Image (cartoon, rainbow, N blue to C red; front, side, top):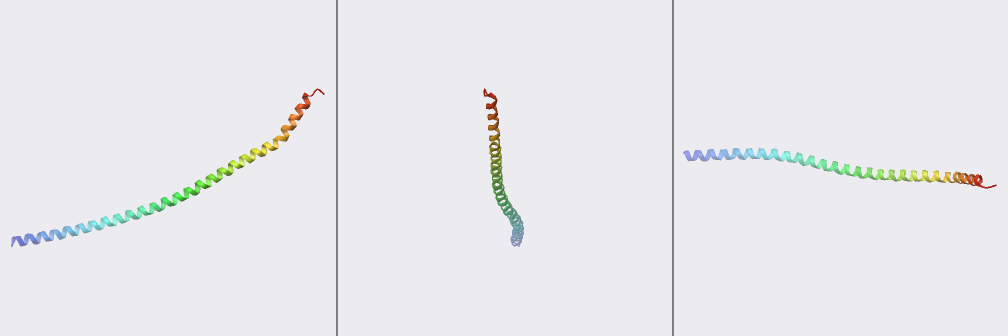
Length: 100
């Protein structure tokens, strides 16, 4: 009788532990599922930020190139406008230094 009781008690304890382990497994599975969703969302966010960064870098390079060209053109225009003036000054200088 005592051994039958021990077997019954042991079986009930095993069932109880098994149920507890199942509950823990469900909790862990839910937590893991949540963490996986967070990771997936972060990966999407990282990809979107990477694409935005690429667009910004491209736009920045275009703006820098346009600014460079604008400065070069402004400098060239200033030089081309100043050339006749400098030539006139040089001519005047020659006239002053001539022995006439």
